[in-house]
Image (tube, one colour):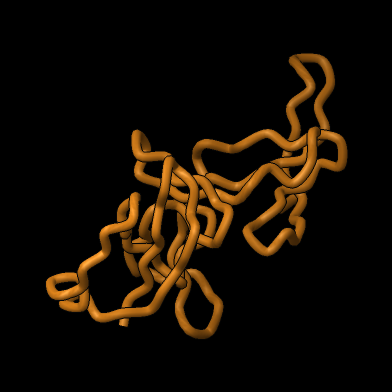
Amino acid sequence: MSHYAKVVDGKVTQVIVAEADFFTHFVDSSPGAWIQTSYNTRGGKHYGADGKEDSGVALRGNYAGIGYTYDAKNDVFYAPQPNSQAILNTFTWLWEDVVTNKTINANNQSNTFTVNLGPTSATSVSI
């Protein structure tokens, strides 16, 4: 089974689990498109059932959730901006809070990231 997100005007409105052939017979006359998403993709990486990064193919940056943005140009899903200090990392497609030096993942959990403050001073914090 695969996961699919209904995207309307760049926003995810629904996520379902279905077989790929479901869409060959499914008639959806409502606006938007169904786009496959991967439950095992977070931060541009693929994770196995054990929660550890593996060699699987990461699909579209992150697993889509209702309210997420679908960026068609980059073919990725990312969460809503969690706060006004957060900036979107366009490599991982996760939000980084520059005030707290944390990466905010899809579950709104934080991990520390590195901030370069310039050539004479820098703060490096391990992930």
